[in-house]
Image (tube, rainbow, N blue to C red):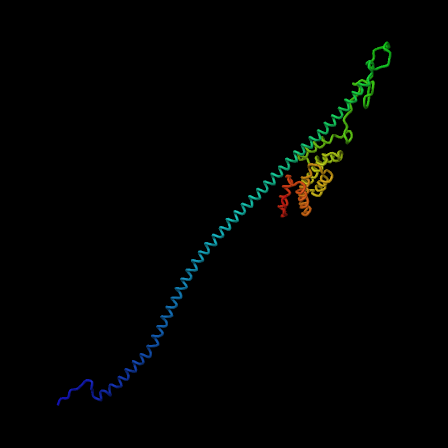
Length: 337
C-alpha cells in the first residue's frame, strides 16, 4: 500500500528541527521591527522640522523683502519731505529778503522824502529871512523918504540957504569945506549933505544878519564841514535867539552831534527845538531823530514815548510814517489812527 506524503504534513522530527529556525527568524524579524520603527520616526520628525525651518526662513525672507520695500518707500517719502522743506525754507528766505528789501526801500524813500521836505523847509526859512530883510530895508527906505519929505517942507521958500547979505563978496576964491552931519538931516541942510542911515541889526553892528549867518552855516553843513557849521549855527543861536532860524540852527547842531555819535548832546539840542521853538517846521523831524538817538542810548521806553508823541501830534507827516516803521521794528504794536 502506497502512502502519499503531503508536504505539509512533514514528519515530526522535521517539524521539531524546523521549529528553532522559525523561532529565530521570528525573533530576528521582531528585532528588526523593533529597531527600525524609532529610526523611521526620527527621520519623519527631522523632515517635518526641516520643513518648518524652511517655511520660517521663507517667511523671514518675505518679511525682510517687505520691510526693505517699505523702508525704500519711507526713504523716498522722507527725501521728498526734506526736499519740500528745503524748498519752503528757500522760498521763505527769499520772501524774507524781499520784504526786508521792500522795507529798506520804503525807509530809504521815506528818508529821501523827509530830506526833501527838510530842504524845502530850509529854502522856505531862507526865503522868509530874506523877506524879513527886504521888509526891514523897505521900512528904512520909507523912513528916509519921510525924513526927506519933512526936510523939503522945512526948506526956505526963496531957495537961499544963508543969511549973509547978497552983496557980500569973498576976498578971493576958496573951496567951501564939506558939511558933515550925523543922524537925521535938519532943516536948512541940503539933501545931498545928509547921509542915508545905515540899516541896523538886532545883534549890533559888525554882526551879519541872521539869514546870512544861517545861509553860510547851512552851506557848510551841506558840504560836510560839520565842525565849522556847528560853530556858525552856534553864532546864529547866540546872536539871534528870538529869530525862527535859531530853531533850525539848534536842529542842525543836533544832527551834527547825532552823526558824531554824541547822542546825549543831540537829545539836548532836539529838546531845545521842541521846547523853545514849538512853531518851527523842524519839530516833527526833531521828535523822530530824538527817538532814534534815545534808541542808540538804549532808552527804549523813552524812545517809544517820543515816537508815539510824534504820531499823535503829526499823524499824516512823513516822519510819523517812519516812526510807525521804527516802532514795528522794535516789536511795539502801533494802533493806526
